[in-house]
Amino acid sequence: MTIRDKMEEILPIPDETARPDASPASVSPADLPAHSAPAPLESRVASLASALRRARVENAEHSSARVDVRAAEIARLEMLAEALAPVLVQAPEDCDIFDIAIAPGATPRLFIDQIGFVEMDRDRRTYRFLQDTRHGRITLIESDEIEALVDSITDYIAHRLIEREKALAIDYASGGGVKALHQNSPRPKTHSSRLTPQQRAALTNYLFFVEIFGATAFFGLVAAIGYWVYRTNLAG
Image (cartoon, rainbow, N blue to C red; front, side):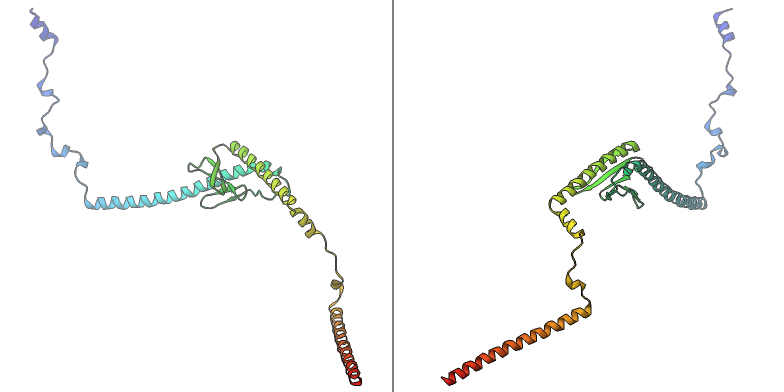
């Protein structure tokens, strides 16, 4: 047996009828995918109407999501206010410059006093502690941890209390305290305040008659002197 005969026994002869590369002409138009044909006008109009309805629903869901985000911001600010409650209890009783309150507006804010407040950043998770100054609004701290905000606001309250004590000391040194004591002290009552309206009217009439009598006596004396001078000159 030759080498060629052995190779023909090992390698089988391929079947020409089972070739995968069929001719493109053998594919029928029915075998083409259905989406290759253009959609009719009615189906396209219906799809646009469905898209408009979905857009309206998504818009409504977006609006409700904004309300939910705002409620979440207020909840975070309330958590911060609760954490600040033990600090405010330690403030002096006669100090009324700190009034922790949440202003639910377009941007919810937690006011510490009239010039300091906390609001949420754009990510809805970061706290921003801001203060209004004569040079504009400044940021004191930005953090997503309540503990960091509590420490910063506590330091802010301490500095504000020191400023208040200095203002009170300067006011007292400039005489404001003495004026306040004089204003609060009771004033002595005068005699005129003890008179009734009837007594005041009687006193006014009495003084009027005294003035009339004094004027009459004065002019009478002047007339007597003039008469005496006149008689003396005639006699001379």
